Length: 418
Image 1 (tube, rainbow, N blue to C red):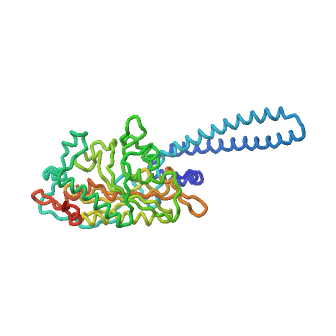
Image 2: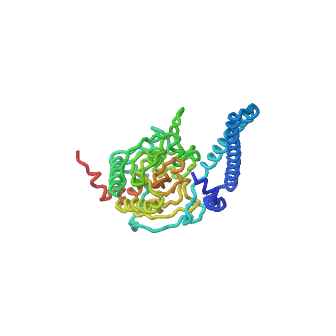
Image 3: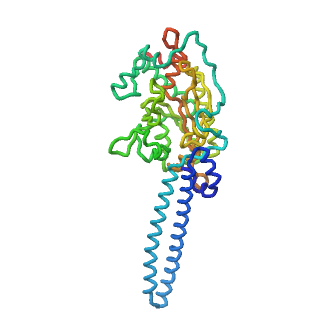
């Protein structure tokens, strides 16, 4: 959640930044009006409370002096009722303000480029040169079916469209990638953690998926439980409503989970193959940092994901997302896009985001900073999306006859003898 005190203090400045991200001006005006209502409600309550304190003192004096207290008692009782009413008005205003604020995205960093959508993202650099083919490269779904690695029809039979089943070398490659990624991240100082694939509403509110993106989530009927859309949700919420010690920071973690998304707003996009599945595997990076350290950790996480792709010999590029393409909770995001020769384009394979204290405010994750408690900065990033990495390997390592080579880095994980 955005810092409401900052918004109150610098409303015009913060509003201007949020409008860069596409926030409706009417919503911001509504937030401002509700904030003014809350201020008035607090003043009314404090005024009544002060009057109550004054009358209580008078009551004591009257009793000591033997004066008649009946009229004063009537005023005290009436004022108590007004206090209760004022407190209820204040509570309602506070709840309504927080409800509006929960729907407002994070403030973008000043150096995030302006833009409307992905076409306005800014390339930072390219890493590795794409291979030149002496034949027309095939797309991954054709290669997957030809080699018997992935069966899309059986995925539909077992569930519905956008589910798949991996067989043989496809399944082994998937497992090899997960182990390779976790080991790679662990060597970079990210502690491995295993978390539930089901979380409650509070966890999803903490990281910003709720209330805005409920239609994209798989909910368990009759329970306030959801299948996770990313490991970012359970890992970030490990420290929900806790106060960490300053010396514990930064905390860096990596986790493998299956992820589940309805992709409700993605109709007609990438419906064929592995790019946009309802269930997919992903290895995630999550970090908790002091505010002054979060930029450094952000760079480490981007480098970790990029170096992982380099180790797999996959050409890729880094791009800074513009304001229009920036995620709800992100203050800044760098996407890593892998080269897919079958599609003749770069496609997103990782997003690394610094959310500053946005998620920490929602999830109440703090650290003891001297004598006071301050909000941590949380960061997250894919390292990597397993299915899309398989797609990249299939397309970049294909041969003219349709066979697929394995990157050298994965050979120790594939050639396992039992």
